[in-house]
Length: 106
Image (cartoon, rainbow, N blue to C red; front, top):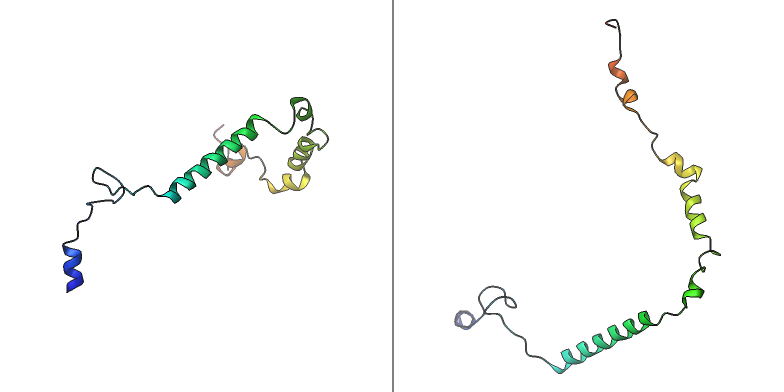
């Protein structure tokens, strides 16, 4: 009974707690500020690494030629085993061949 009375007279926010005109605004804590600062520092470090790449343009221009990635990819798709997995091509004549029983009207 006493818990019901406490909950009945408790002032709360109507609707969703953290959205809308009468929302509940969380107070800013030191932990939240530290987390946000660390996140900004991490993003700044990532942007620094993106601005200054590890390889120069001359070094990165032909680095994939020795790996022959493109040739391996083409060989993978033209492989005989892969072609067997695919369904054969079907034309409209083959689809409608069951309608061609007799052609006496020609």
